[in-house]
Image 1 (cartoon, rainbow, N blue to C red):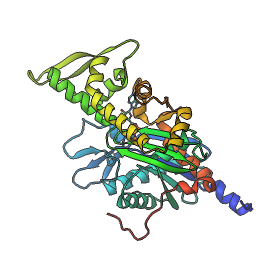
Image 2: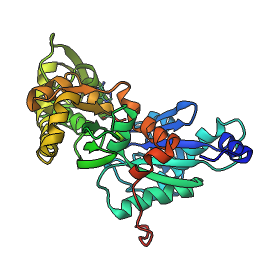
Image 3: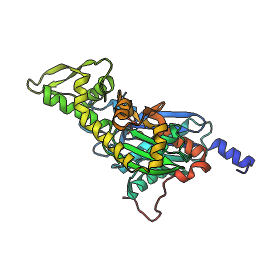
Image 4: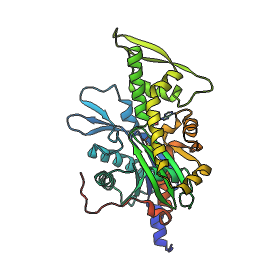
Length: 354
Ligand code: ADP
Ligand code: MG
């Protein structure tokens, strides 16, 4: 790299931002500072004007408590941009917030955004456009599992293969990588949210108890599991009794929640297995050493690593700070731009938005 006082100045003052635009949470990594923003990917909008009223944590707080003219939405719910303008407003807000923290807010930032593997050209273009419209000087896209692997510290530049499973809210992404490229990958629209839905269904069918989404998620995080626990637990879930219409509380066990979420967990395992089926034997042999790295909030489900290890006969392990792997990986890709530029996803220049 050529060194000149000018480029040094520019590098010092300009911002490199890595963004994990997740279906559940958005994380922003700023060069030299680490993760500066972790907020839910939620936006409260005025139903009539479609103007955003609150973004991130402030919006999530409003869930279930809004007056008739306000709606709280997750614009990325299924892993793609279904609500372009709202996603753009959200990105703009987060980029501005990260920018505010820089010493001198001069040039516009260079941005890397993580996108689910296997999204369409139109979806890629939508993320790119949203980032540029939100004030980025340059925007690069990187597939989420690739960023997760980089953030988890996997040796993806090596000839030896490595594998990552990134389980978020709306999507689970699986990728096998070697020599800085993707050998096999899968994206599945079953992840953490689906487990919450399973728990809601289960409580309704078995106990006639209607529970809210946050109660379900809380139950999953507290006593949910993918494999039997050394000590099974119980928890009281509150909601509305559908027979009496009155508030009610039911004590459920971790065994019951495991049963409730069994199908979705199995679907995720099957997808990992399908990806392994496509993996060349030499790389398969490498994976017997390096194992399968789990990332994303969904990978924190208790004993998921044990369950995968048991089902696939390859050691699965949860990455350190699993929730921030994608954002950190996006940050690393920018920091070591020349080394990792091959990982960025190309955009078809001719394609148009939507
Ligand atoms: P995304 O990348 O889609 O934004 P995240 O990686 O932030 O998603 O993960 C969010 C998901 O992780 C949610 O479904 C959440 O319920 C789940 N999650 C977070 N912590 C835990 C936990 N301790 N146990 C089980 N699931 C968890
Ligand atoms: Mg994610």
